[in-house]
Structure formats: C-alpha cells, structure tokens
Amino acid sequence: MPFFVELPAKFSWIDRDLYSFDSVLGWFDWSVIGKDDVIVDLRSCGSANYQAMSLLVLYVWWLRLHNERVDLAYDDDPSERSATTVWQRMGARGWSQALYRPSDQFRGAPTKPLFAIRGREDAAHIGARVGAYLESFSHDYIEALRHMVSELIYNAVEHGTSSLNPRVPAIAQVAWYRSRATLSFLVADLGVGVKKHLEGAAGPFATDLEAIRKAVEPNVSGTFGTQDPYAAQNNAGLGLFVSSGLARALGADLYLVSGGGLLHVSDNDTTGKTLSARWPGTFVLLNVKVSPGGAPFTFAEEKARILANARKANGPSDPDVRAFVMSNHFGRYGEDKDEAIRFRDRHLLPAIHEGKTVKLDFRDMNEVRHSFAHALLAGAVKTLGVEAYRRIKILNGTPDIRSTLDFVFENNLD
Image (cartoon, rainbow, N blue to C red; front, side, top):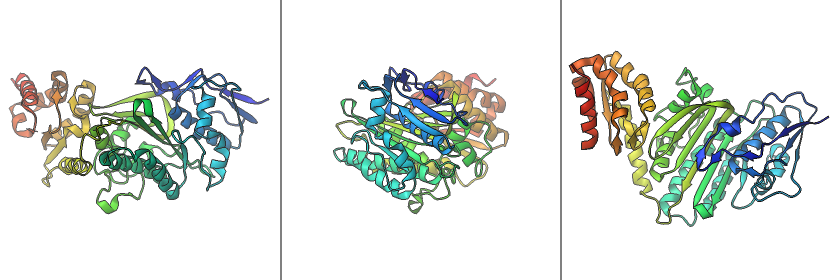
C-alpha cells in the first residue's frame, strides 16, 4: 500500500501580510524513510505560495534519494491558487529530470521560474534569467538586485548541496508580482546549515539564531564557503553583510532561516526568533517592492557607505577599543528591547568586563526609544559608575537620540 503525505488546505507562510514560517516548516516529516511507495498528495491544497512550494521540491528530491519511490497526486480541476496550479506553473512536474539530468532545468512560466542550483554554470544561467526581470528598472535597482541575487546563488553553490549521493541540489525561485510591483526571490538548500558551517571558523554557537546573527556581521571569514565570489573586490567576508545593508536601503525584507533560527532584516530593524519547527539546511527569502521612481539611492554610493560601516565596525587598531555601528545591528530604529538585551549581553557587557572602551556609533539611525536605550545601557552604566562616561563613547547620534541616551546615563548613576 502506498504511503500518502497530504498537503494541508493552505500551504503558505503568508497570512494578511504577516509571515509565519512555522506553519509550513511544521508540515515536513523528515522521518518518512523505509516506505515502499510515497505519494505526495496535492489535491486538498486549495491555496499555496510559490516559495513555500519550492521547498516541497527539495523534500521530494530528498525522499527520492533515500531510495523511496515517489509520485505526486494532482487535482484534476485545480483552482487558480491551488498547489497543483502553482506546482505546474513553476515547471516542478519536471522534478525528476532536473534531479538526474545535470543539463536540464525546470520549464516554468516566465514570471514564476524555478531553478536547480548544481554548480557555477547554473548560477550564471539563473543570474541571466533574473536579469530579464530587471531590464525595465532603474540602473541602481538593477545593480543592487543583481548583487544580492548573485551573492545568494553563489552561497548556495559553495555550501548548499546535501551530503547524499547523488547530492540534492539547491533551488532558486523567482516570482514577479506585477500588480504589487514586488519581486520575491528564494534560495533554499538541504546543506549543513549556517551553524555547523560557521563553527569551523567563528563558533561555537549555542543556537542556530546566534550563528545566523554572526553570518550577517562584517568580515566573518568563510561564512558560506571557502571561496568568495567577490574576493577580487576586497569583499571577502562581506557578502551577506553588504546584501543585508542593500536590503535595508531598498526597504526590502530579507528572511534567513537555518535549522531552528529565523532572522528578519528590514529597513526598520533586525529581529530574530527561534522557530518551533526546523529546516534541515538553509533558505533565504528576499522581498523587494520596486518603486516606479527608481531606487532611493545611488548603488555605488550606497555600497561604499555600507563598506565604510564595515570598516568602522572593525574598530581602530587599538586592541583596548571595541567599536560598533549600531545601524548594522538594529537598522534605522532602535525599538526592540529584546534585541537590545541580546546586543548588551553578547557585545557590550563582555567588552566592559574585559576592560575595553566601547564606541557606539549611531550614524544612520533615525530614532532610539527609551525602553530600548535603557535595556541597552543601564546595566553597563550601573556596573561602571561614573567611569561609564569614559568607557562608553556615543558617536554621531541625532540630538533626540543623544538626549535619550544621556537620560539613561544620568538616571543609572548614583
């Protein structure tokens, strides 16, 4: 008897513009091994998201490469948004050919293509196809999006294939939603995950989320592989850092999921959470709303600004000084008290206890709320006493930000 794996009525992580990845990731059953015949049943799913369905391709490949016979059951009269329709439009019915024939790609609709990522040739092909979407955009949109897309694809080339033999390729999916003027780009894999990979150079890490946070910091050597596609431009260790900075500048949303960790980078802030379900690899989702007026920056100038922030974050050569550009960690708004506490415990207090001077640079930040500032600084100020004025340096804040921070200093000193 075949073993049925049935999709739910809704297979999407979007609900009224809010994202809940647990709703999709919790469906995947990675214990389905040893069945003679597995049928993935799409017939009951009347509402599906293209990016969520792309993860299903990896799951089908994973089942097949565990020596399972895999078939799919399709709806004979599918609705416009059903899983069957989405699967067909992406060209995912050709999953077997894309897995076993290195020269084959999925044959999906021009506005919803799906790609297998097996090596640098695939990466170049995908980059060219994505470029077709960008021809009508402004030059700075084209350059920024090409940079981010290329970085994510090459990351998958370097580290995204699984340890199975033959290996499960990584995948990329692009969706252009013309009515919303939004480009969505997903890269996903069943590789070793961020935590395991980074622990070879920058660990250990207590959680997946901690490792993902480290991955988007500047100058994290070997973040996603031993070769960096931008090494010739002196960007080694800066790929995800620059991409996340460009996402903020575009007002985009960047979601990074690996294992049980989720990091969301937006123009307002950077927030993380631990998921209740796990993804046994890594996927990155980029959503960019394209303005008809063009990009809100000049690409060359914005990239130079981001790289300048990276150099600033390295701090001066003095080993007794630690420097942080706060917008690298929190975006333009200091609002999330929990994020401030994490930064305090991970960076600020350890530096204080080591006897270092800490420079906090608030350039590019528009606002810092009092609850955020208190969570960030109160503990360190109480620990240091009046010495806090010498050991904690505040740089480049607006008058309002400086006033908020000064209030925290004054009210936590005897």
